[in-house]
Figure 1 (cartoon, rainbow, N blue to C red):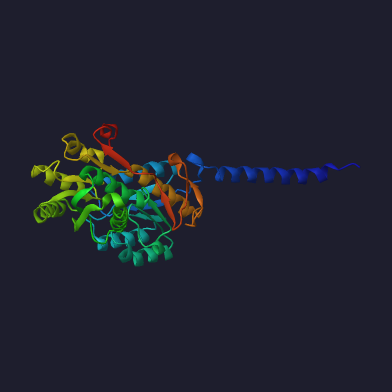
Figure 2: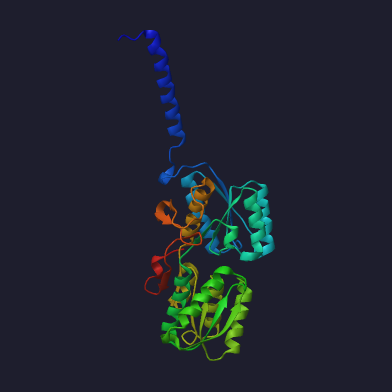
Length: 343
């Protein structure tokens, strides 16, 4: 059967049109760096407060992730841990039409109404470092499991104290969700038989302020002359406690451990006033939170346990129950390895 030229030409035009449309669509949907399609989202990174290394480093990681994804990240926050100021930043971010807020919460419940309002207006919420109420966010990017963070601090202090004597905890604020969660796991670790001769005498709060933390550390040494250790699960409280012990010439008598950066603790370790402490990479934490925010903003991630997403150089991550993603395990720093780390 013969086909006329007039019949063939329309068919060819249709095929060419379909091919051109498919090619254009393929270019539009082409993945960005690390295999993730980018829409150029705009995120606001809101720490508990600005001006300290951990959150500055989180911003560095966030900027790295944003560059890979074609997104932009604006960094800002209060100058001290203040819930009211954080709420103002949340409201401003919504008004400026940010696609998502990435927040380390000063108070999980007090921030919830503002964050829920932001979500209703189309601004996604991802928490990092210190979680907010789970109903007020989609994903919580945590540095390591809360249990491992709490346990490692007790493990390190126990070895230093030879599992005997009084110790105290110098925390941040009474409403800090991550601090309180870690302390809960410290208490759980302390129930193990090896710690039966160790006694927690007080939990003090330095409010993540160097002056207040120093005053609280001094008060602990005065109130408990037999004190043999202080755990400070905050990068503000840990160097403050170490400095007080050093100034009072009690290095070796009062053991100090907790969470801090190797750069800020290096001198104390070299002088023997701090034997070991722990932390994770805040650069990686900010990086992970931003990768998660991009996946949430695009709709690829909804917080359901078992979902997987591409976390770039951190590999594939799986959402855990409760909408949680984890960076990795804490690093224990001591005199042997501290010079390998510079952050």
